[in-house]
Amino acid sequence: MTKVIFIRHGQTEWNVTGRYQGQSDVELTEKGRQQAVQLADNFPVEKIDAIYASDLQRAMVTAETIAHKFGLSVQPEPAFRELSFGQWEGLTYQQIVANWEDAMVNFMQHPDIMEIPDGESFPEVQRRAMLRLQELIREHDGQTIVVVAHGAVLRTILAAALHMPLQYLWSIRQFNTAVNIVRYDEGANPSVELLNSTAHLGSTVQRGII
Image: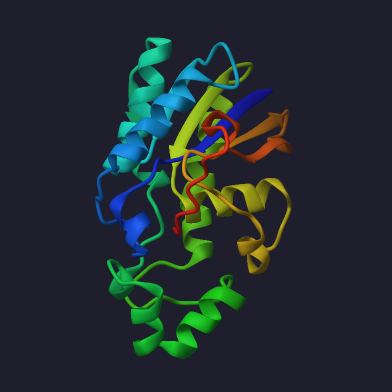
């Protein structure tokens, strides 16, 4: 059995302004850094064996804050990077709709088949993330590990754990520093123990977009 604690990064400036980040390397806001501290101070387990993170700084800084508490170093993993939004990166929802109205409708209603201009598809993101995750599950048998990543890529991982078609991916919410816990038993069979928890933030929840 391997237990994996999946965490979304803290708030960024582009979360605040509603811009699609994708693989743009956007920094955490001061609030985002504080969210990471609150999570580290109120972490849901007392011991972890390793911590991995997307190599984008918003995930790495969030992960490093947690890792410091446990005396660990963060291992960067490009496989857990956010979905590439191609031509949409840095744009707001309104700007995307103004130029790609039909594409944005498909993005929301049919993420399983949507193709973002010069970007990635959700099935592509799920394949790269799950391939590395399955390796980590085998490497850390009997242990608890942390993976810090991003809203879209975490939704694809959680959809796989829930045996949910990617068409329904937006049914899963992921707030900033949300905690998700999945147990993978022999054969990597998953059982979801916690989903999108922000209990460590008290009553303050940042509902930033991807």
